[in-house]
Length: 91
Image (tube, rainbow, N blue to C red; front, side, top):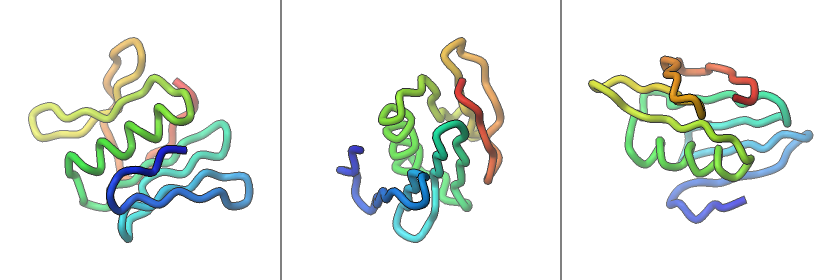
C-alpha cells in the first residue's frame, strides 16, 4: 500500500488495514467496511491521504469539500456528508 505521504503510516493488524496520519487514526478497512476519521483535522493533506487509501483498496470513493463542508462522493457522484467515525460499505 502506498504510504509516500508525509506523516502517514499504514499497518496490517488483526486482518485490518489501519492508517494513521501523524497521531490521528484516519482510515480502518476490514475487507468490507471502511471507517473514516479526521478528528477535526480537515486539511487538504488528510483528504489526499484518505483518497490515496481508497485508491489502494480499489474503491472509487473520494473525499471532497464543497462550501467548507466535507463529503464522501461515490462513483455515481452522490454526496454523503462526512461524519467523524463514519462507516462505509463498498460503494
